[in-house]
Length: 228
Length: 228
Image: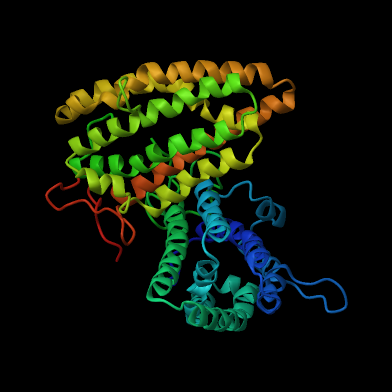
């Protein structure tokens, strides 16, 4: 993506699949909220849900999910097609759901620690925005999602790292916090691997999943091919 | 696999990862058992757990899990390495866990229907045994797992299809049963795609996952390569 090697069709596949992940983030945060006994923790954490779902009324503002839809539309996908999630890879769904499993079943400290991937997201997002403007200028007007995350993510991460620092009292707790962060990295990594398999190399989307349209010919030789 | 194109290392990766799936099958069946209100249903369904976990005592017999370990050992893997599941792909774990999600959360009829992939397994297993003996003769003495499934799977499938036939009263029920079977197919398919990505093409196992040893050079050109 950062080297400008993706076709429009591949960016569509990415935006469509990543939408599923975006759509479950507020559910993930609501599960964490539901497990938090401390109102002061909940008051801070609920910001994450507002950031993603937006807010009705006088102070109406769009949330991250709507901003992601704007990005997906800019790749050329119809809004309803994105929102339906009918065409996401089954693997995207299964791997994303593992994040929900994690926050439902693991100790609370580990759930908070699993969010710490955001410690690293501001620099990555800044780089991504620069590279997208450079290589995919037709997407430049639809980067509001990333723009908002530049400030939201560091705020969220600062609270979460402080919480983990204050509550991981023993070496064993600290190791469990690190493991939760590793597990979250595995979830993000596996999602990208599934996308790469389906839309880059070997380029075999499974039955029912989104297929890149012929006009958006992939640059990688065998992407978009069919299983023999 | 059926064309004899897999290296020993690739067969190890398959056996190691598939072990994770084998290991959760009795858990899956125990969840179904726990949701079945009818003792006569439970009496039949518990056979599946016995088949996989085996039985202590006078009538001691090995279950499918031990038979699978025997197969994995025949590929050259140490037993403890297989049982630990430390080196399975995160995707194998996440996608396998989706099967547990399915039987925990979906209507009971759909849980039973999801097992119907076994309607098709006898012929596939018979073919697989023939092809394995032909192409990987060094595995021929370790096919007990498949041998047992030749009779177990059709018995299980006959009961399950009759149950679905008797209980899917409306067209809507029937459609839901079919969808559950499709969803199960997606789970099996996604597992194989993740294996193919990691160990065939592009051949990029994620951090921490099993790596094919150098001596077992993959025959597919770029398998076993590293992410640049």
